[in-house]
Amino acid sequence: MELPAKARTFSLRLILACALLALLVAAGWYWMREKPVAVVVSQVALGSVEATVANTRAGTVKACRRARLAPPSGGQIARLLVHEGERVAAGQVLLELWNKDLSAQEKVARQQLNVAQAGIQQACTVAAQFERDAERTRQLKARGFISDARLDQALSDARARRAACEAARADGGQARERIAVAQAGLDRTQLRAPFAGIVAEVTGELGEFTTPSPPGIPTPPAIDLIDDSCLYVSAPIDEVDAPHVQVGMVARITLDAIAGRHFNGKVRRIAPYVLDLEKQARTVEVEVRFDDPAATKALLVGYSADVEIVYTTRSNVIRIPTAALLDGSKVLVLRASDKRLEERQVRTGLSNWDNTEITGGLKAGEQIVTSLDRAGVKAGARVVVEQTSKPKP
Image (cartoon, rainbow, N blue to C red; front, top):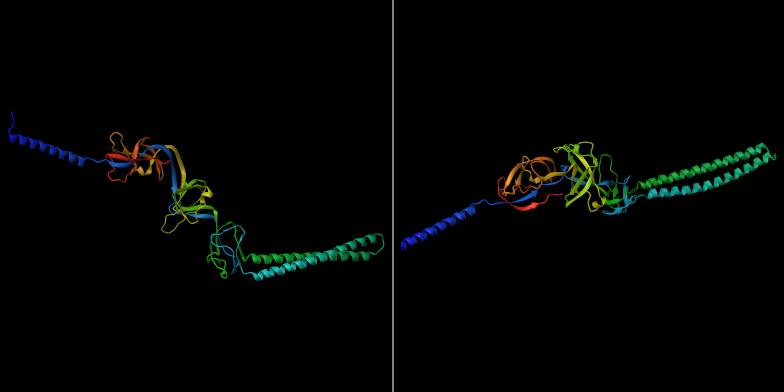
């Protein structure tokens, strides 16, 4: 039996209304459904964990030898033989003060030595002749040809001439000492490099006067010399961490000027006292030398540096990135079954900035979240893995 036209129209409208309602419900569900959060995860794995201490304030790259040089005596700069940035050899003259008076004194002393040497030759030649005459006189006396008085006279003359020879030699020695004194005075007007290195700074110009630093009054050095073949880092360590550090421990050195690279080193010295600076924590100065001197060729003295000293290492232990730890030693574990996050309590062991040892609560192969700072990352959240970070070696 065919429905009236009005009934058919009502049925069609009812169907359309139901379809529209279903569409609205589906759209609402779609827009209101729980959206998964994109996260970065890391796989729990076995590896090594190091316990380290680091400096509390920036350290400094220093040279093993650095000399701020000044002449032993003051005077006017007559010769300036080097310039900043120049490499010099040990013993090389760097500058010379006016010393014409001392140079003249040395020349006089050398002339006096020449005169003294001539006198020595003359006196000793005569002494040798008199000694030969005395010997012939002794032989004649033995044969009875001359008297005892004549023999005594010959021997006395030989001894006197020998004494004159020795006196002339003593005068020669004094002349040599006068030369040494004059040379010492000249040396005091010359500034020599105590070791091979590079000239960092020159203070003074030709014709200017320079003086050594009086006691208790620091003055700029005439020449600042650096031995850049040997560098180390001096850095302050908190007094609480200082008992962990021992000479010879392995360390890693990083420099602000060379990002992304670290240098291997070893602790070479620990200060025997605690440094107490006003309004700062008490620290102990630690020196770390570079293992490979060749790797420091491009480094400059004065660079800021950080050191990380390794005092304990545990190998083949379960570890996670330290960044994955929540307050209270908790982590967010990704459940493989439903892709939701589960908060789990863990027990930790050794820890550093990169890795933390896990002694309980996790097993190798599980995945934990490391992107904890993202919105919506919490226990129970449904997630999608955006990236799986690889554990650092």
